[in-house]
Every structure is written in C-alpha cells, then in structure tokens.
Length: 146
Image 1 (cartoon, one colour):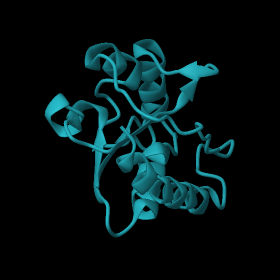
Image 2 (cartoon, rainbow, N blue to C red):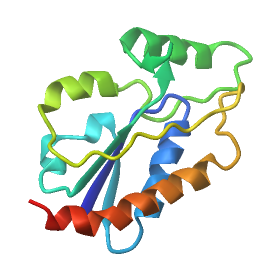
Image 3 (cartoon, rainbow, N blue to C red):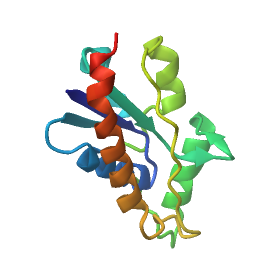
Image 4 (cartoon, rainbow, N blue to C red):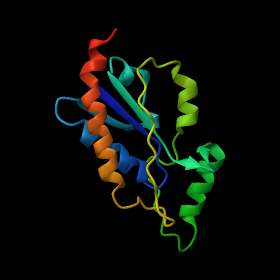
C-alpha cells in the first residue's frame, strides 16, 4: 500500500505532525511525506491513502493573507518563531482547488494543538503517530473494497 501525507506548515508544527502520522502508518506502507508544493497529481496517482493537513488561521484554513501575516510574524525582531522550509509555498486551500476530486473512504479529521508559544503541546506527536496506526489498521479493508 502506498500513502501520501501532505502538509502545509508555517512554523514546523504541522510538518512534525505529518512525520508522526507517517511513522504511525509504519512498515508495510510506503509513505511519502510532502509539502503542498510537491503534491503533484503524479505522486497521488495510485496512492491508497492521502492524508492532508495544515494550520488553522482565524478559525479556518489558511489563505494567502494569513500565511503572509504568519511569515511576517516570524521575521519580527525578537521573534522566537522559525519558518518551516516550505512555509512560503502554496497552501492547502489553493491546492484543493487544483486537484479535482479525490475519491475515498474519508477518516474522521483530527486536530493537533499548539501552545500559546506556537509549539506542539506535549503528547501531540504521539497522538498523531497513534492516529497513523489507526489509519494503517483500516487500510487492508479499504484496499479490498471497490
């Protein structure tokens, strides 16, 4: 089974969660963890599982303006925030508009929380890895269905 985990990350938290989910998917699953800019149709073709996640800005999906504001915040003098290597690339909102429809079984969405200092709360990576294991456990049943 092949899985693709797509992330949009400003300060690295969602990137860390994506890596944790990939670890949870574990052996027996070929997993590619990619930023939104690298999530091209050819990569998605034939994937048995696609997981996509990103930060929330203003209680919803990020947009160009909110991503720009997040990048500006990291650049302020005295900021302790560090931009993820792909932070200034396209966001999921834009990407969803380019890919058409992905058919699938749909897993309940998960939220992973950060502190007021924009760091993952303790235990969130472990919880993401566990969710990856739960997804992996469902894969054989999904692969067998039409």
